[in-house]
Amino acid sequence: IVNSPVGTIADAQGQFTLYLTDGIGPTDTVRISLIGYRTLSFAVADFKTKLSESPRLTMTEEPRQLAEVRIDARNSKAM
Image (cartoon, rainbow, N blue to C red; front, side, top):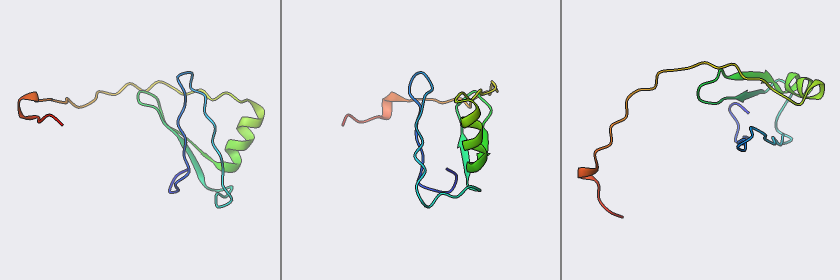
């Protein structure tokens, strides 16, 4: 839930459970994101309606070029 401490993560099959607390209202936003896919955003009320019609959400691929990451082990220290 955007701008709140409420959130969740999906398992390897993409299934998740999201518990909505009393402080979450029908106009708050549910945001679902995954690297390589277009982010989905719904008002809580719309999200509940969508899931009652079908418990499956479909995400659209959106490939992105990630920035290069360099790792230099010469300067690392053992912990």
